[in-house]
Length: 217
Length: 218
Image (cartoon, rainbow over all chains, first blue to last red; front, side, top):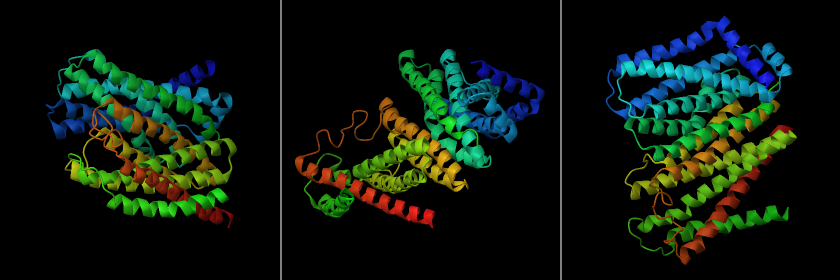
């Protein structure tokens, strides 16, 4: 637990000292949002609104998470590995990425809904879907970016590895969010909420189990 | 060794039987399905074989992480390769069937999307293997990805379609092939066909493993 917190604080400290890494990811997100605004202009249909939102988040996530791993040099990784254990390392990375992604996607919600207006019937469920969806993407990308970093930190490779695995999360979060905009009853939403939470838990558990085989090489 | 020989000798007549009887046997003329019900012998059985081969690959990936023996890695890869062959066969037969019963080769259905995503993940597995040079690292990294992808595939193909309504037979109130439209004549072809495709898949995998093994030791 101490080790986990130590790495987590280290991540935040290094981000405060090098704000350009997160700043780069944030700027990428804002630029993409603006490009969408310029090209699309108006989205009257909730399904399209939700789909475009998640596509933007997905590609910003590739950028944000991949950056975090490339910023670590090989030597620094080895040093961190020897100081902590694999479980503490991957947990803190996943939690850190989840927090970053939640922050980015909340910023995205604010900017995106100013650009494209959309009345939301059920705000609680809407933000729950944002938070759960964003953290799910972050958890899966934490493990997969480690895999991709073994093959020379190739962003294309990370995208093709991650996209098929991320699609279940994407499908459930889009449904959840679309239903929240339409104000579908809680009892129906609960099912999707449960599945999305379950997917996050399963992917996190798999990361913790599998990461020891990947670390230290 | 005897077992190896047995499934090879059996696979040949079973596949021939499935192919001929599958096209010739009398099938119940049901509403909408009619003659397309014969796809049961080809499509459903291909998916059965594919799932079994992917399970085998998953097991060998876990074994590789435990033992680190290169043979287990070869086997995991070979099972994925043959699994993909059956996956593509299952997808093509499914698309032909869909064109005649649903009127389109592809419809936005959770089960179909799940299958497509599973195949994408296994294609990515192939790319990942080819982009790693060191054999131990390749083994470990691809085994980890294989396990991760397999668990997600199981969740996606078998659990998610049950959450939402699906057009696919066996989901969302649609009649499954096996529930009431499967009569005894069809069973007589269906079960041998499953075994035939599975045995053929195992045989193909064995040849792939032997080739890979020879290449490795050369």
